[in-house]
Length: 263
Ligand SMILES: Cc1cc2nc3c(=O)[nH]c(=O)nc-3n(C[C@H](O)[C@H](O)[C@H](O)COP(=O)(O)O)c2cc1C
Image (cartoon, rainbow, N blue to C red; front, side):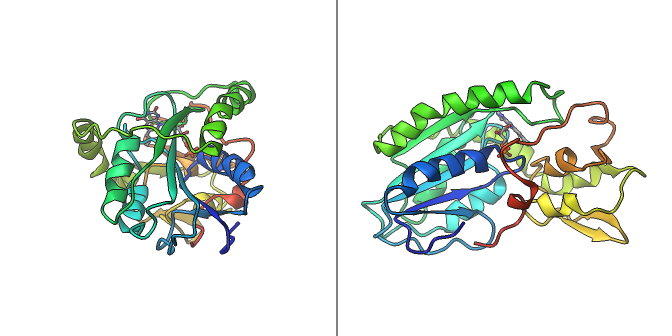
């Protein structure tokens, strides 16, 4: 997916594929105009130069804020020489993005960046730990394919808006997020596990290592819920919360596209 000479760069983070799907669709629109490189937010951020015409960030909303990995990536990305580069963000969410745009903007400002445009995109809501998941995946996907269209137009036309930093919301976000990496101790793996390793493959932060044929969780979890949703045997659950709940995988993103991809 990487294209070093691309005029357009998109960075994405994804658990269950929604954000990668949007990133790819934005990429399709921009690649007609000078090529577009699509990079995961794993690993160290690459150098973005003044020649880069647009830089986009596509990532899920977590607890009205951003995934920890996205925060770390944005805080270290140097955009100081890119005053003319159009920067935009799309946060995919189940409906309420809270401060997921404001937080990213604040993180980018540390090294000279600033969002020119930010929007949420309501997609399939995947947070299986809190509620059961909808079953009409095809219907919701068809709807969200449509609702992305005006966002694609906005980005194509370099629309500008003001991204407000709702700092008060960060209190809720940080009270939850600081405990998340270690809470993977609550994952349980049933005897249905066949040691296939799909859970380790789809994890975007390499939090799962196969140990004697079983997933071992390494306490840098982002709570992206990919392991629960992609296990072909439904062998991974969170305590006794998720056993009876439906699973979700974005139908337009393949397993091999998920997981850790070094920038
Ligand atoms: C840990 C976690 C927290 C979430 N928090 C929110 C939230 O605060 N607001 C919201 O609207 N959706 C929330 N969601 C839903 C996701 O943002 C949404 O389904 C997103 O599109 C998933 O993107 P992905 O498939 O790229 O991982 C949350 C999901 C997870 C896994």
